[in-house]
Image (cartoon, rainbow, N blue to C red):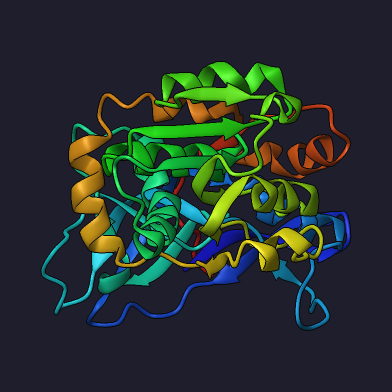
Length: 315
């Protein structure tokens, strides 16, 4: 049985490739993809060949991240899911995949594909928030109103933090941040003149200018968490970091995807997070989508990818 997977073969060259699926193990499930998404901040640098990494890129490079799909078959020892149920997992832009049962999350019937896809990245954001543990009364600053920033804002508000401001350079993204619970949404030049306004901040841009701005606006002994994955440029500590004796936290993958999903599905139903998907495309359009994103023709927060119903092909 074969699946089709989208690979970067060289900078700015992507192609769907047929791959043989492995035999289904006793603890594995076969999933057919119905919906995916494009993680712009991670995927575009890989597509362009500009991603920062500790090692040189080795092609081909798989694209994509989260998926929602339907279970087609399961191994003899699989207990939690059965054929026909919807699950969320992460295996990239593929039509089908064989996944360990432990790596799939069952999606309740009332949860949209859009919300299900956000389960993974909101868990990644939640890990950083849980590390820093801002108190409800603390003033928090988030940069910016991209996907990671908006999901961090949602997590902070859902965890009971009352005073969350967002700094965002693009005015067209301000309204969405307000709808998700931001106290204020500011342009960089609208931040308070005092350099000691916030006790906690979250860096969600991978941009050094934003990292410096957050350090400047933290109170002495403030806490700064880097949630963005650093694909764009190095982040540098400024004199303010040492003068104020700030604390720096780093956070990457989620804390516990299954436990987070159980909580997320209960609280996200009326959140409005589906609005993050500002561009909807088919899987066949993805090669063109990557190029249009790199050229700046479109600047969505996130891209929703729909897969046409199809059967995995035989040999």
